Length: 535
Image 1: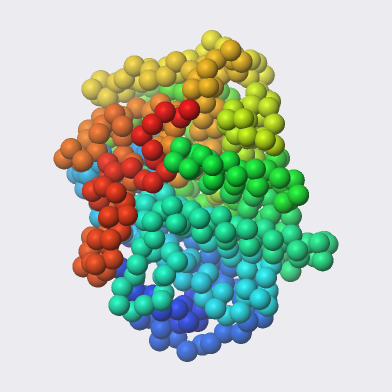
Image 2 (image 1 turned 120 degrees about the horizontal axis):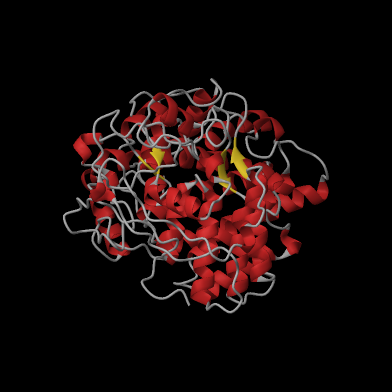
């Protein structure tokens, strides 16, 4: 892990962002020093497309962030909790997030960057008149806001949202249920604004020079917004099935502009000056390796994507094999586990590989689950399922061959060549081929397992889906240092609020814990994470 943070995309971004932040009033834990710095900037801004547009590249790149932020914000939590990765670095003497000894400083970074690099700027864009003067730009801002803040609330639960920036005396938190309601309303506005613009100005791309996702194509932004709505709807299906179905049907209604269907629709961050943070973490820092669960599922399935996702091990004792590290393993000092498989730096994490927010393959699997639940407009579950697999194979440029019709291959057991204490039998017996005669639970496990494979390496959503459904079945941590607050088999459910919130926003954080409905630790379930059957 490195402690330096590089500048955001475009040298002018920070100056413009500082001007926007000077418009906001927001007291937040860990951010006061930054706020004071921002508030001394007297640059001022205009509200034309050029001035407003300059802020957007920074907001987009901040979704994942530079390598230092990304490592703390996602890689050393969600990416590993999802079973995708594990670090060969024994951070803090193997007492860290990866064995449930949750590091407050690491987790506080998520709060700081989410608000200072994204939330502040988006709110300030609205205050600058963008809502009415540039409604199409405001629509894009709202999609980015939902994408960014959904990542925050799905890690912690309650969060400062509706009242953020309105008081110097404290920052109230919203319940997660309330935040999701606001997400859906903001996506309503975004889709309406963008559809209205496209209808009135066909083919025009005024956002193109600021767009790191779709090169100014509003029709694709509309598809992304609808697909994001479908994803969020599925998150809440166990806690609020009525709202979930209604929002999913709205997302799937063709009259609203459609959802992601092909790999040309995939939503990712890339462009001149942007680099993939996982490349640096993998290559320069050697801080991340393949997770054991990916190895055992993809090797067992003889999945052709394994060679795209990872590189073979280099340790002389098992060179040429694909060998991941089980989460919570007591890794030894570098280079002890350095010879295990890492992410493929020629494909998935080249310096310029796009960082995927959402893919068409994921949407096909969302539709498969929606169809399984009998929701109108979702199509046929089996067709959606097989299309999801094929779309993912196409994304990675591999041939599916007989994969979709393989009814016998199973995930394999995990063997750690360096430490047999980390070994485990396979935790799932799910096969690949769709079985129309199977029950809904088995069908769902099949859908989510293939969805999990297709979403690699985007661990945030993969961790969410694991918590929501229990699938795919993942290896539990080898060592659990949570002092009993997290059940090893149930696995971690959230991150605790930063301790700095208790000293700087004490009254409100106590209310937030009440909204959470349980102790502020990693074992408490979020609002949508309901402990009941999927059907």
